[in-house]
Picture 1: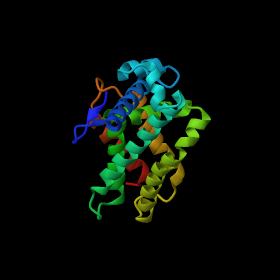
Picture 2: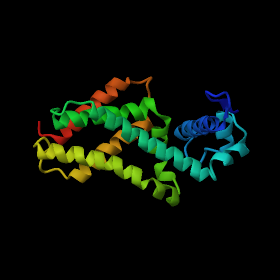
Picture 3: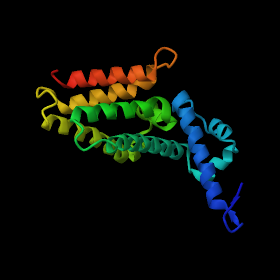
Picture 4: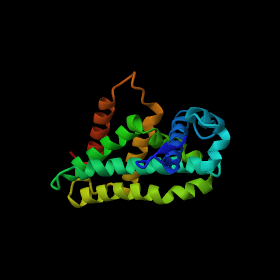
Amino acid sequence: MATKNDNGTKDTKNAAGTTRDRILQAAAALLSKKGYSATRLVDIAELASVRAPALYYYFDSREELIAEVMATGQRRLREHVEGALAALDDQTPPMDRIEVAVQAHLQVELTLSDFATAVTRNLGQLPDEVRDRLRSEGAEYIDLWRRLLEQARKAGAIRPDLDLRAARMLVMGALNWTTEWWDPRQGSLDAVIDTAKSLVRHGLTSG
């Protein structure tokens, strides 16, 4: 339904944006719960309160819709972690910065965004053409973690015997996997975050 702008005229652009966002949110919620194979367009439409054929007004195909959800999830995760790091003092020690990144990542994955959860639970199931479209955004987040670890090593905070690439992949893999097993009924988010920070710190350092 069209809204009205300040001049009292119909603002179909804003209405379209709202509907599109609602469709994306519905798709993200279903992907995070059901997975790629079980997420159907008719279910997305029902959750978004639109008719199924209307989805094709906003997206050319199911794959395009899912690719947009994934790209949004990757971007929101990166931006949240970047924001948490940007809020730190310039003199914050490198390992403390890594702990902040761990905390921000888990907050998004586990409580703040169905989009981010959809990414981690479905990325490996996507067709190659969809994954290819996501490489650029994903590479930016990988670079963020690469810089964090490299800065920590230059500061002497990371053990010299560790392979930084392997360390980065293991840390990011462990963080992403929490969506598969964490249950708030069996342990608090704070406990998961504190445990993750401790494991990362003591795994990377000699102390």
